[in-house]
Length: 119
Image (cartoon, rainbow, N blue to C red; front, side, top):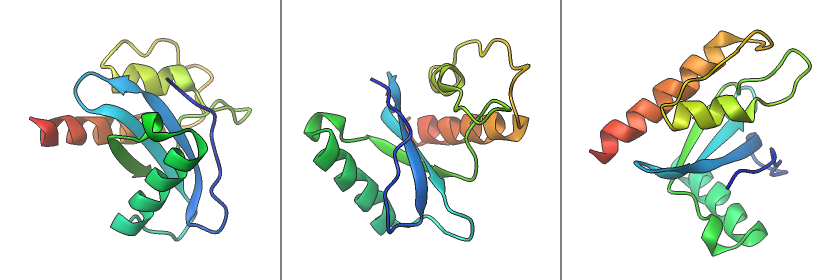
């Protein structure tokens, strides 16, 4: 399952992206924080509750990772295939349209940390 970026108004989350289930860490949400905001346990709960309300209990994420940027093309589209590839340790492929390579590194680091925590 994957989803479109979704906004949660009135919170420090600019948008979040529900990513494909990973065999090691389960369903992952990458949440893009608004500038100057910090992650918290209560914010994780708020994102989880929002997913349950909007999609249903089946969409309850196993993990939420707050990031400062998502991999986007130069025209601003989120590169879903990159998120999926990184989360599944697959080959990422062509990144010529990627706006900022640091976003991929941040997502990869987050996934590795989550997988280590699960071991």
